Amino acid sequence: MSRKPLKVNDSAWLYAESHRTPMQVGMLATFAVPEDRPDFVRDLVARWRDVREYSSPFNYLLKMAPVPSWKELEPEQIDLDYHFRHSALPSPGSQRELGVLVSRLHSAKMDRRYPLWECHIIEGISDPDQPGHQWSMYMKVHHSQIDGVGGIRLLKRIFSADPEHRDMLPPWAVGTHGPDQSGLPPRERTVVPVQRAEAPITAAVASASAVVGSLGRTYSESLIGTQDADRAVPFRAPKTVFNGRIHTPRRFATQHYPIERMRAVAAATGGSLNDVFLAICGGAMRRYLTEIGTLPSESLIANVPVSVREAGDGAAVGNAITFLYSSLGTDVAAPVERIRAIQASTKLGKERLPQVGTLAMDAYTAVLMGPFLSQAILGFGGRGRPASNVVISNVPGPSEPRYLDGSRLEEIYPVSLLFNGQALNITAVSYDGEFNIGFTGCRDSIPSLQKIAVNAGEELVALEAALKLHR
Image (cartoon, rainbow, N blue to C red):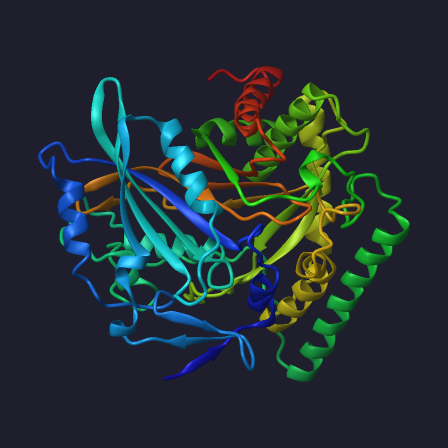
């Protein structure tokens, strides 16, 4: 059977993994049970259990020797009962109970003797007015196989834009090479433009020069500091309660807002939706640290993943991301002044990214994240000054409603990973006019994670009030 060697940047997630720091990313999708099909979940689970076809990456088994690679398994070699699981919340199942279950499921490191994915169907979610009216699907996949943009591409293939679409295949049969069930043409998005040059040698020299120059400036400023107060660089972040050693148990919390509210703030401040996202996160963390009396005088710094997939690259397997560093303005009390500081910082961060092709960008990312990942691999993370205080990511999702066998997707939240030294991750996915935020935290480091989620909503209100925006 064929083997597919991993890229260096994908392999790093495997070497950084431990029982305390499982390197997996997840998705929590909640659906409405069709009114005319009360047995929808039971029937879906029964039908999916009979589907024994697998598409990548769901048929990949990890082999670490002689080099990390994926071995493609035959269908009969995959134990579906291990990967596909059916659960129910005790009645009446609340959102809190759903969060507790997902927190527990996401805490467990996946067994490398099996393909690195799980799919959980969870029923019994209700509210006082409509008992049992919702169900959820929680999935997790190893980060060495998929990043945020790749995950959204899979989601778009798995769920349909057609509410009448029936007999839809499960995620493992669709994957990246199975039938596309979306009913829509693929839409690609490139965040960082890729440099094209006619002469390959000239292009290689220019790319190497751009990469070396950017890394040289970044790490020289990490060592001696920067003259520009708005520029954020790695390993200059103040140490906080978010940046110590972590333990296995996780907490998971959510928030969601209409995208139009955030776009209105972005328009009023002349920035982007992502600037608003960083501002409400920075404000939420400032409030939390102020409440426990540990707010540092220096601004917290965010590590912000950036997609670098080329236009036309339809692959979902593997990672195609780099990172920029941004101030979160936590040293600024006024919300509008804070977002201005963040805008200035993200602008400088984007300017520092080299405008190069895929291979050169992979090399840039490997060197940029080398010290951070080395700490994680060697077990030193959380003992010294952190590279950043928090990872904050924003991934655009489907703009139109999606369905699974006629069951409408109501909400979708990302569930992310943590490192020693990084006890909090905040990731957002937009969907059907809503901005959905998943807060993943170390249970011991952040015992009141829900407060940060609530604070984020209050910060959005504070921004709207300061800008005199009417909801």
